[in-house]
Amino acid sequence: MNSSLESIYIDDHLDLYLYALQLGDQVWADELLHKLKNRKETLRKEEYRRKREMLYRQFDAVNLKLLEAYRQLLHESGDEEATEKLHRHIWHLKLERISITNEICITKQAAHGIDHHS
View (tube, helix red, strand yellow):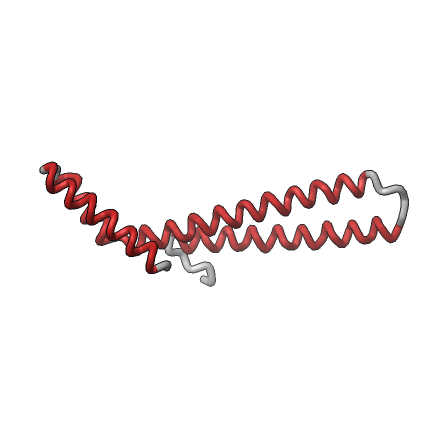
């Protein structure tokens, strides 16, 4: 976990906590204290959420590459070597997509505290 992110989280929530006390809003102050006590879990989930977003962007990029490769394959004019090269490229893209999908599943499980090795 990024310690500077945790410091910012703590600083922001302490500022809000003090503001809630100034306003006399004890319910809000208590909620903020609860969030501070559970910050590690919250920050861990946020870290995994960001990682999943990055992985989904990678997944989308691979899908676009696959679509382009299939378009090229459809328009290939019978050159066996070029066709074979496109098939290999498509195969590698599919493997990359599977790898990204596995990483997405692992981060989802980790965000929820599930051990993916069991």
